[in-house]
Image (cartoon, rainbow, N blue to C red; front, side, top):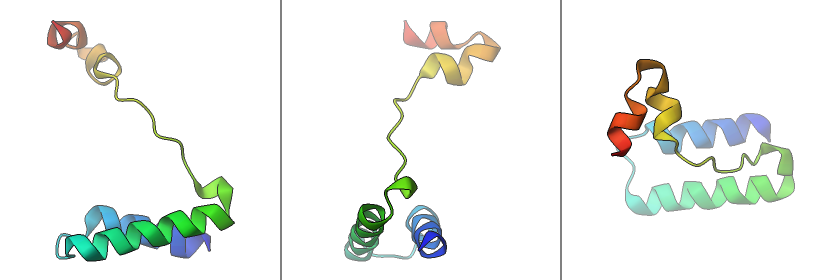
Length: 64
């Protein structure tokens, strides 16, 4: 299940030739696998611009 899950996630992120319907079907399969094996589900993390650019000192400048 873990291999299938990681392959589907990779396919959804990298496959540029899939139709929107195919990508939606892949997403549904991923969700079903995550229901069966909950430890595969990774919670969404909020995007933090300061964290991304903080080391360059650009984060605070971009927020303004």
